[in-house]
Amino acid sequence: MANARNAIGRLVDSFAGLPGIGRKTAERLAHHVLRMPPAEALAFADAIRAVKENLRPCKVCFNLAEAELCDICRDPRRDRSILCVVEQVRDLLAIEQAGNYRGVYHVLQGKVAPLEGKGPESLTLDPLVARVKQGEVREVIMGTTPNVEGDATALVVAQRLAGLPVELTRLARGLTVGASLEQANRDMLADAIATRQRLP
Image (cartoon, rainbow, N blue to C red; front, side, top):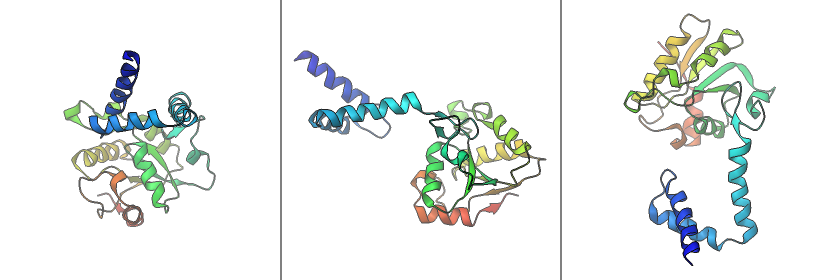
């Protein structure tokens, strides 16, 4: 019985370690897993294992990929002259769900956040500059979060791309200031992409 309590306790602790999951919710999730049919619970565990073992950053854009390139970078229908720079993969997914963007992406894997000890050196800026220098990209859209840190990140990116022959634009400010892209609804993101603005 002690082993069963330890197993449940470990599962509760694991769920409670997830962002936005409190102790009570973690307990409910753990007991839900306990009530699952064995095949369903093991499939859930296999899905987690597959994500950790099989996914890696795309070697071009740093999106998640099961091969060297992600699905977007492999898609010949994407417009490689337009590149949207986002902070995280979840921001990319939010824009994709809006459904009207046909360019490609670059995931910075973070943002400039001095209070958290994260500077420009922690971002994938060098690969971004290298991509733009290849000459295929004509427009770089700043798809960073519309808040102080997102604006600081966009400024750093703009400074690194200064002097290169690309137009720099940003998502329209119909997005709520301070909100993350993943919280924006589909129509809002679609409009922000369509009405993006040239950076000064």
